[in-house]
Image (cartoon, rainbow, N blue to C red):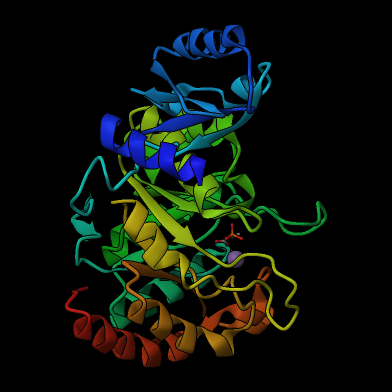
Length: 354
Ligand code: PEP
Ligand code: MN
């Protein structure tokens, strides 16, 4: 009750902002002064408010740099609570309108639907050209295809590498489809000019050194949510890229690990409205990696559009049975040709275009 009173008082006197440090009942004055001093080291304003039994210290200013653990470790501190989110650049509070990423003549977000399709991995010229032509004819506006593959086994196919990048470029020139492909390390950033969007895979979502380097370029980044990461961690990963200066970030929900074993991952559909409420960045869904099986892709795609996603990235293969990776989840070109117009109708129903 006392805490609630303090909270209301702070909201009123200080605009309801930022962070509060709750001191233990009966804390000595010198401990309170110490907390104020320690907080001020992070270049925020600190104000102690003392009630009958307890004191809280209110922090305002740019609290994103405040080290919560450091304050928690100070003598007399009971808890430290953020009242405002720890991310700034990605925050809807900071930028009210939807971000629209414009790349190679394609707009993504703010009513413009991203429809990427293509193989899990680029395997050969013939394979890629066949698929690129098919997905283009079906209305995709982006071609996906992995050339650096994050495989669970070191003995599995690791991707065609640079040679695969050249094939992606060839397909882009031939079919007029911009390309999105995964980079796995800082070393791969040297190829940034060869692609239209760089994908950061689920396994690399918290590779902070990589994220920092991606912040230094302008190529748009499709950032996938790690399979064990919270929405806040996901947004903080996007914050890393944006804090470095690269404002072109697209968030991608691709399923998370839960207790459920019936699907490869559990598609967190509710992440879409949550992310769109908290952030201004476009939010797309990968309905292929989440279930891990192709028969679920159509229904999850429709659900994604209905929940408000700004796009889809779907795996399509000309002969999934012989695919070198993710064989079970890739749609055939015919299945994608059947699905694409259905998706388009859902997209139109949502008042969006692609
Ligand atoms: C992929 O897109 O092929 C991929 C490996 O995705 P994720 O990082 O979501 O598993
Ligand atoms: Mn895949």
